[in-house]
Every structure is written in C-alpha cells, then in structure tokens.
Length: 188
Image 1 (cartoon, rainbow, N blue to C red):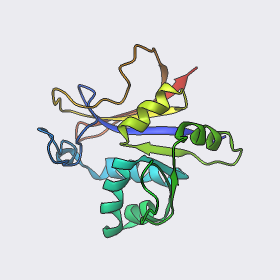
Image 2: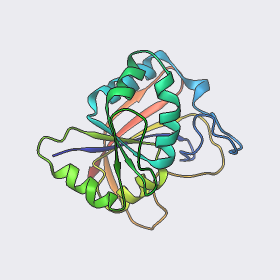
Image 3: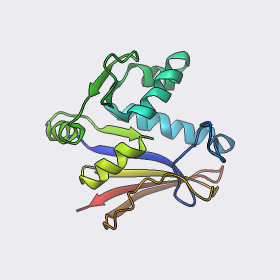
C-alpha cells in the first residue's frame, strides 16, 4: 500500500505560503535565509525515498518552471521522478514523467494508495490539494519543516474545518540553522 506523505515548509505561526519568493506576498522568501547543507541533504534523501511527487497545479507550474533548468543530483531526481499533477485545465504537461489527474483527484489518490506495490507519494506545497487530502483522511504522514520566523498571516497546511486530526511524533530533527523538522504519523 502506498504511503501518502505531506511535506511542507511552515513558519512558527503555521503559514506555508510564500516560502520561496512568490510575488505579491508581503513576507515572501522566508526559507532562503535558513538553508543549510544538512537540511538540504535531508530534503534530498526525502525525495530519493519517494516514488512520486503529487502536486497541485500552482505548485506544479512553479516546479516545472524551475527544476528543468537546474543541475545536480537533487535536480536530477526531481526531473526524472514520476510526477502526478491534479488539474482540471492542464492537458499536456511539459515536465518529464508527468501524469495529469483530472476531476476525481481524491478517488485517484485513494486508488493509488491501495496498490500493493505503490511506493510512497510525497506532496509539497499544493495548499488546496493538501487540505482536500487531509479532509478525505488520505494523509499517512506529515513532515513539517518549521522555520524560525512568523509572518502574521497566510495559507496554512490544515483546513479550518473544526475537525480534529491526531498525529504521533515519529521523529524530530533540529538543524544548526534554527530549523526543526517534525515527522508525524497519522493516528487513526
């Protein structure tokens, strides 16, 4: 059975929006001042262990516009691994190894997860998709990379729907740059 992992960069106040320099956000780019070799190595390992990326359309467009122009082992993995993008409008993706999932994304993801040989799928960014997956109780693991900054508002990982979701802390990694990664497994 395929494990579904949501891996997000978040601020101390729980915002996932604008980590990399997105235009229009007042506090965009809060990840870059905290990049370190040890943290990058763990992110590379995470992507190496995943069988595929699952992305919403906005995150897909951002990644597809950047990764093909990058070089190195991490970029090579991002560019060659299987990618699934949830979109109602994308018909012919240009990024290598990309499959489009249309209108029934939740059903499709549930079906992927039931496959006996399905490797782990990792979701990054993809705010709307992540909230839909959480609401459908399809997320097995959440990895929150918490950055030592608060931005006062923005999009958050978990939906504001009044539903309790329990997780068990599986692992914690503290980096010398002040970043902490929490690896949480869904308690059902």
